Image: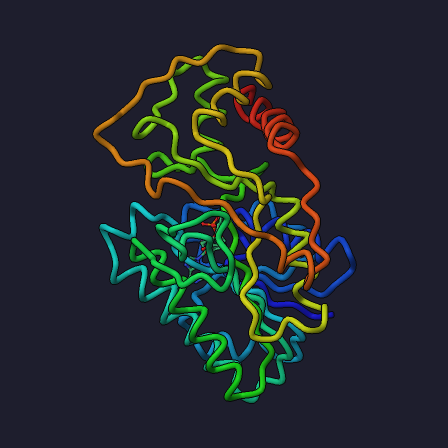
Length: 310
Ligand SMILES: NC(=O)c1ccc[n+]([C@@H]2O[C@H](COP(=O)([O-])OP(=O)(O)OC[C@H]3O[C@@H](n4cnc5c(N)ncnc54)[C@H](O)[C@@H]3O)[C@@H](O)[C@H]2O)c1
């Protein structure tokens, strides 16, 4: 098959693009490298194009003969979105509409969109199910929910199959560690391995659903080809609830180091609980998460160790 992957130089994008290329598919990556990402890790067989999802003429040239588009390009930090909501709307919402508009008459069969578990916000019960009404609590979460609506609505009008995967907290090798607003898993791993203290927002009892990148890639691959997913939103998590304190315990266990915990009670740890009901993913995608958090942390740590050594 022929694929276009927007945001394909990012953490998830590189993993899915490289897997598709390794499977022998024809893959083109479009990425403007704006999130501090680089094209260095991209498989040599992939055609990498530096550019924006808001550049419609460029999209026209890349969409020729494409069977399926993976739309991952986005600004991805909840905290940053509170500072720059317009920028988040411009990339995550308008960029998605631009992509859909460029696809009119292109013959593309399906779009797989990476939405986020963040769209749920604070919910009265856990685990969260796709039928629960989202309560986004950040411009980032609003932008992902709005983009879901756009792809499904435009796809319905123009006869393009669409599916949105609501990914929870993905982690694993290749995840960037930006100097501000870094994701919790690579941040804590790096701090544990370099002897630093981990800073825990709130009291650490807030819970999340951490899902290993290889499980996310398996779900993304399936979403491109299975039947019966048109216009669906599908949760992709591990289905396991883990508090930030539990995560820190596990990091201590796998690293064999005791970690100094500094609690910053002034700063909110976000929603109190968030864990995915993955029954729809099991039923529609044949999704079976295979990597436990303990195993995933070990795998990620061996990769981190190499980065620290270098
Ligand atoms: N990583 C997670 O835990 C997670 C969870 C839920 C949803 N998601 C979604 O998955 C997707 C990928 O996330 P990620 O963690 O790999 O983030 P990432 O920042 O590593 O990747 C996003 C990529 O999009 C690119 N990009 C940004 N603006 C662009 C533009 N205008 N045109 C072209 N490319 C642009 C960036 O340069 C970057 O390489 C995003 O849509 C994100 O919202 C990720």
